[in-house]
Length: 298
Length: 243
Ligand SMILES: Nc1ncnc2c1ncn2[C@@H]1O[C@H](COP(=O)(O)OP(=O)(O)OP(=O)(O)O)[C@@H](O)[C@H]1O
Ligand SMILES: [Mg+2]
Image (cartoon, rainbow over all chains, first blue to last red; front, side):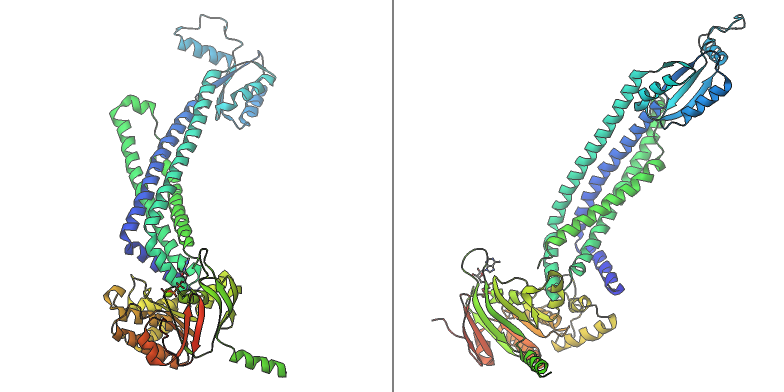
């Protein structure tokens, strides 16, 4: 393949975009519409997932220790727990700290009148998890550890959160699948509109002795460019909307701001930009490659 | 030693186009070609005439390897067309110039680009293209029209662009399927004269036509077809009338 030929195909691909203005417009609009919906759902779902995740991380398991467990043993247990995948954070509270905190939370006032610590056997770990679906495993493990007296968990919260998580998973897959099918349908329809011109051109090229590659290259380049443009438009639109939503939520209702922690726009777009461009370019490539292929058999 | 020389001589004398017992049936109905035998030598000028539906275009399509025959053997320019692999078709076609009744130009490119396109396919350098395209365009009498789009040209001019495109790569064979079908008598004659000129330079020319006057006037070899069969094949022949 000569550089000349490659360059020629590239120029022709770019020219095709302007030669068939309506086709370009229709294709860009279709891809944009699909990717816009995708971008919107993606932003909502990642935020939702993020909220659930941070809720999960606020669920603690409490592991009460037996009386007289040595400081070394405490450090040892802590290290063992930190080593586990599903554990995010481990906080240790001595019996005295526990009592002080309890008294404070319940407005006991001056606790120096107590000569003894009523919560003497309540030295404990608060364990925060990355993944609440692993909670029962962790509890089982905790109960086998020497020095652990009792494990308190909130099984219900964990169950609800795990449930919500898998629902989000299914919903995402479902929506993305539907969007994908709709895109394919719309795009193959759009491509069919523009095919007549191409069909003739490709046949002519093939009669003169053009290879499949040579006949196909300009159209495939055209498709890729259309896909690329078609992904930039919705990215810009979603970016704008997302920013507006963040500002709106933060400013208008303070209770909403407390409830909904939007992910920073940079974080969402760090993944959304490559995904959208990838899908756009991919659809453009596959769409043009396969439609042109149908007409190569002259 | 003697045998190789003999064989080589035989090869160079071998027809540039040969069909042996070629039949072609489309899925439905009577065969479009039925046991056709035809041999055309290098440098010949041959008219193919016959009623509508007699199989002339089918014959051209077989030579271009657009279609495969149902049976029989086709050799074009030393290539066994039936055995040709799909990947080899483009290279094979580059030795054949083709012209059609409906011109088949690339609509959104100008005259120059339409002709240059054939050169780009065979990966000629920019310098050669800038030399060859103007030269062939002046041969067909279109020196002043480089920038025109096909739709800004008359039918005769469009056909001359198509002819220039077919010839710019200097093919061994030129196939023309009713090249004057859409042209008035004056333009028809101009195209035919060009074809004859090309033939005089050594290109083998095969022309399908319904133009009785031109066929009778030019006194070339005439192959007449009827219902998929060659019914006559005459040197310096004429257009055979129905009945
Ligand atoms: N793609 C096809 N599918 C089915 N039958 C076909 C096809 N193309 C041609 N035929 C049939 O084959 C026969 C020969 O057709 P062909 O086009 O070769 O005729 P022709 O001699 O070129 O006619 P014309 O002078 O009108 O161009 C006709 O009966 C035609 O109906
Ligand atoms: Mg015909």
